[in-house]
Image (cartoon, rainbow, N blue to C red):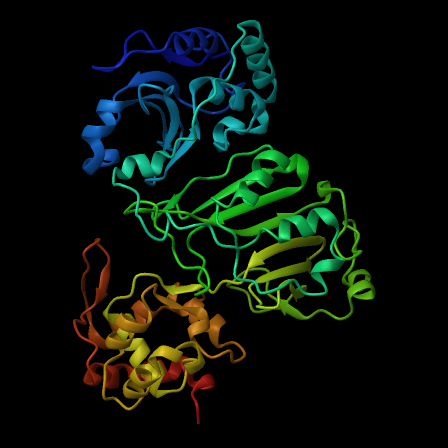
Length: 476
């Protein structure tokens, strides 16, 4: 059977291959392909300039790749400083950049336990090979050195840390006070729920993730990697850290010019947690069984965003009096439990001229929720009266883009708008506006509407097709 390809005889110019990497490479080269996960080669190579042309010189000077993954991603050894061991970083095929381990020794240990958070290496098919790797590490007496946590994304950015607000003292999540229902949760669920909405650098979050779950807290997120999952399957918990929480109570916190300190924004809770939630058995087999315990569902939803049939029963509860953290129990053939920071959906994350046109139209048709803009009521009124353009409102009132909850909470409106902005169910803002204004080649190779300014003449020209889309929700 085929063995892994290993080429570690020479390092790229300016680098040296650590003895441990050579030794483990010799061992990996004798293993059957697939038994240690799915990767193309253990090979020392210079990092391709194309991965990040702007940072190529620094990357090639201070790092080299040593493992290639099937999707084109690379693992690299990064020189973090004279007093620290080289760290292992992921250079993702889509531009993701994150630390995998603070040393080669830690990486090999994580690999041997299936906890690298690199799917191709943690694949279940590699269990036998990982056990053999663990035995090899033990025989070689490989120990993980103490090393300061390394943030590859921030290092790659290269800019000095932003003084404010990242350097400010970590504040508790803006949740006012726990609700009575919060106090009915089991101790493990309640502990986790109390951490939702806190920053990744909060000492209590760090203590929970590292001490209770035995995992690492992601030090930052970035535009290319705006969320990071931390899975602790043995503890029945999977966490999501993200800086992209679309809720004004959770502003983005810059760490460097292009990286952010994320919030603990979402958590899946599963049976291995060791306690039920509100008395609901994990093996409940029907909606009726859950209803008997919790009462009628508080809502229903579709299983997928492009479906209309509301097949999923859910019971949603606020866990803090400010309404920022929610518990949701769902039944769709089985029970699922989540904890989440209340967050809207992004209709248009990076506004453009079409966003301004839509906002102008929406203001005149009563589609926007005016209560969401207390600081910009006069400007919104000016847009509704056609005395200001939608793009002016976007620039001043929507610095983080257009969100689903910027629209009125009318039945079906936000769902329809989500589909229209995201090209679902044969609905698409771009297709509609191309019909109205014609099309031209856009900057990224895709056709776009011939529209350079959201004038009121342009809004009027598009109104007929927009009225057709939003007829059911236009204020009378």
